[in-house]
Amino acid sequence: MAKSPTSKTSKGTKAPRGMRKGLTAYGDAGFSLFLRKAFIKAAGFSDDALDRPIIAITDTFSDYNPCHGNVRQLIEAVKRGVMLSGGLPFAFPTVSIHESFSNPTSMFLRNLMAIDTEEMIRAQPMDAVVLIGGCDKTVPAQLMGAASADVPAIQLITGPMLVGHYKGEVLGACTDCRRLWAMHRAGTIDEAEIEAVSGRLAPTVGTCMVMGTASTMGCLTEAMGMALPHTGTIPATHADRIRAAEASGRAAVTMAAAGRRPKDVITQASLRNAMVVLQAIGGSTNAVVHLAAIAGRLGLTWDLEELDRLGREVPVLLDLKPAGSHYMEHFHWSGGVPRLLRELRDHLDLDAPTVTGERLGDWVDRAEDVPGQTIIRSLGQPLKKTGAHAVLRGSLAPGGAVIKAAAATPKLMVHTGRAVVFEDVEDMTNRIDDPDLDVTADDILVMRNAGPKGHPGMPEAGLLPIPKKLAQKGVTDMIRISDARMSGTAYGTIVLHVTPEAAEGSPLALVRSGDRISLDVPNRRVDLLVDEAELALRRKAWKKPKHMRQRQRGYRKLYLDHVTQADKGCDFDFLEK
Image (tube, rainbow, N blue to C red; front, top):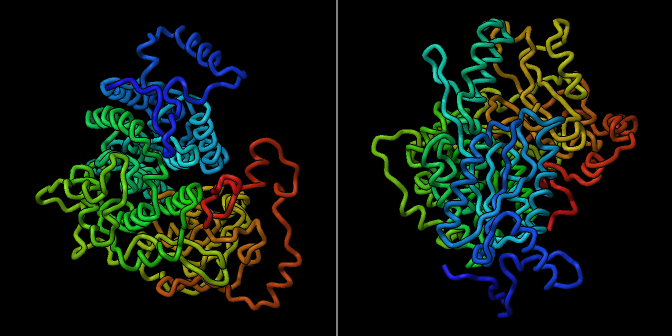
């Protein structure tokens, strides 16, 4: 393609491109360009190469992150695609977050990665950027950062791992991790067997192969038009994943020439389409928080009531764990996201834009038909008659709460029970298996101080384990309520993201063991059945968690001072548009 050192802006003036973009401030633009070229020529680049459009590639490889174990291969393939299309590729490192290797939580670090991504995009010359990510908080962080930086961007998902096998059973991280660990806690699987299982649950690099947060965000990114069609679901180890990387590199060069930015792709229509798909795939509750944050970066409206309304209209169509029975590779070979979108077309805005410049409807029209597949259901034969998520309101959650109804126990969806309260994650850990714990299967487990500020970092601790003495009697589900999150791979009758969180002195902070709580999912209610006079007395005696009364420093202080509540996406208030 022709060399393109400049491009036309919306006002018709020429904007700098390639090496001329974002020059370091030395007070002499000519010298800045001269010095930049002098240093980069130390890497052996020719003048011809340096005159081409620059396509940056985020390098999120880390030895701590097996979800991104294929990133180096993907970078090489993206570079190939960029060069085949006449661009010059530059990879640069950013923060890499893995769910299981992040203390206190990966959510605590999501905003740090978003800032890192945004500022490195701003700081370095690039005409477009390919965002490589997969693990739970990585893709949201990259989309948030790219949206704020407002440079042409395309997402490349690292891809789900392949399934594992143990004694003839197909296994997957991490829904089966949780199921088998629950069996271990109940005493039906011994130490030797659980250790053997741990080597079979995650047999390859890549993200969890169930519809957890990583898979959910891969699907939603594609549905929003920010990744090429079919690329949200390709297994991490397959050759098609490498070809997708090359194609993404090619697409980035085209996007750079067109000046197509995240704000041009992620629109109000795109966001609503993502809501529809989230309900239909039985997706992770974490995506509710991430979509809110992405919307906030672009000044779009995030409406929990609209999400709930769509949940009543759009059924779950995807037969994948934890709502169903199968795994991501089965979904991919059944036609993937484009085939699912075809089933949902009556609920979608098919005129929504995409990174290729096409309408979303154009991708739907080209969707593959796979005869005999049963993974992607039709609207007439859904897996569940309603969508994955319901939004609850009530005296216990005046700002809202979320329940993954598709993974809950039907008989518990309307229930009134006695609260058994845990002050925080540590208290729950220390007492949940106490044989003297006053708890029955009809009670409601309540954990607080696990929200954005309360822990801090809103841990995936909302899946409170069934108390051991009940698990040993065969109890497999109870109502659990908290201001925490839970993994998208988890299941059960679990009310999450209670807003405001307890650390802000909300009604959740005032619950005491023995109080009655009413859950009514059909009517979207969760209520604390304690009179206001008693709550007023408790409110006067309430104190903030100890860590919020202590002096903090560094990123932790920044986080505690500025993180928003779950309904606003847990982003930093100063980063909202």
